[in-house]
Length: 226
Image (cartoon, rainbow, N blue to C red; front, side):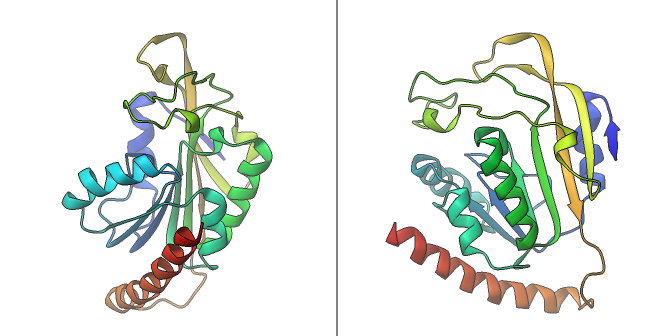
């Protein structure tokens, strides 16, 4: 199902249709961790660019104590986190930076990691974005990560996903220059409901905190061995 809305209505509509989450895995967050799900008790950010990780540790973690930041790329993430190990996986502005084949593999594997939802955000179609410089739009040395390698449409997602889309979402490029014509964008949300017997929220928090501590230790071991 595809729901088309105006640009300013897109994010609020998606937020209304998200399940609450105790644990969130935020893949490829850059220097801006996801904010769709407000202050989950456990927010694990996985980011391949070491300078972005350092920025997050210095500027974001001090004010957001629920954040854990790991220097892992998407391939390491899907090898690190076991099946159904977090409530929600968020993949914001990531798959367009991968080849179509790698993007599809990432989506397929994150479906096994999430217990409740996978949330994807990407431009509608191929939004041209090349980087000749090592510097990115934030003045950090992440330019190599910024090129767009693939374009996506609602047709890339089967009927198990709900698509929320706007056809004029992106009005400026990464350098702040206005496009001649706006580019669209969409969220793809996949939800699993009533897949496991319910437990109390408090018990769930304790169980997930214990489990995520083990996951974090494992992820650090992998990151340090690379």
